[in-house]
Image 1 (cartoon, helix red, strand yellow):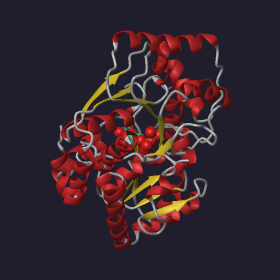
Image 2: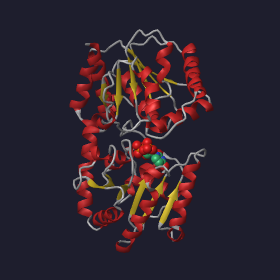
Image 3: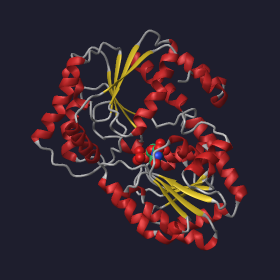
Image 4: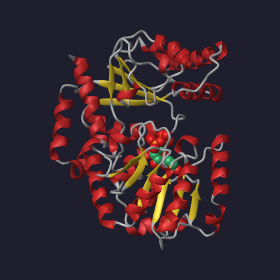
Length: 402
Ligand code: UDP
């Protein structure tokens, strides 16, 4: 567990001192975050880094995990997808189970904090079961640009009870919603196992363990096997690249055993590159391991993120932090992180040839790669590290105190 001073060498004295100043008016406040671990790793990862830092600067901050049974999480997964635009059959039984889990949680969780922060849709209706004695904030991490209308209307009745909502992108703002909406970009923790400095020995050890040789340049996409991440498109770009430069492609995507779609996509990718797999020129990895991700990112000559849709794209942030040049789609939060031609290249997701050309350009031009990598790292240092998130939360509480 880290304290703020551990970040001093990374972000410098000014950032640290500003954070302490911002915390001053909040001493003695009690803050609570509520989320559900089952909803993917990103949110939990951020809270695991943020909560100790908030305590470290003098604000008592807790973190409670929402409990639910498998039926509840099946329903809220559907809610999650529908918030991002999928269709949903919003039946009475779904609504009832959604409420029931929230009511249950409220019975054995007493909240007397000064601020309550609710993450994502699962615990959103909790607010209905408490006598409100403090500001409540809903932190929505999902892409809200095209929410399913019926579901959005259903959820709005709870959202209206909140004092503020936090979203990840200007594009996710809901016109006409009479609740203050604030944009806070996601961040990475430079000291977490996925992002911390690791030695060359550790990198070699992990690459060896997962069967990745280093005799050729490696190009990598780290992403779930998901249609929106376009792994098949990545293999097509790779086939073009391979005609110009001898290199190796690694696709690393951890697989949830209960995700049949992920498995199908994995199989499809495998069929498309059978010959390359046999030669060990394409390597597919499905193990989830933070240090492996760290090692792969650090040892790749180019990182690809050929997503068709992307909420923010933390894999891009992680790669930039490791001073890697990134060739990525011009979608979602990626253009917030990559300036085309400066710290990477941005392309239309369907421009497979363009992806290949840019990858070749970087592979053939190590100086360009190095320059881009350096610039990328500085952008992340300034804008996308956990210290910035801490600072944004302190600003938010200070504003709400006024
Ligand atoms: N990730 C991982 N192992 C994998 C694939 C992804 O640890 O095999 C991590 C990745 O490093 C990143 C997160 O999962 O931290 C994915 O976040 P991102 O915003 O890129 O995409 P999402 O999966 O949330 O759509």
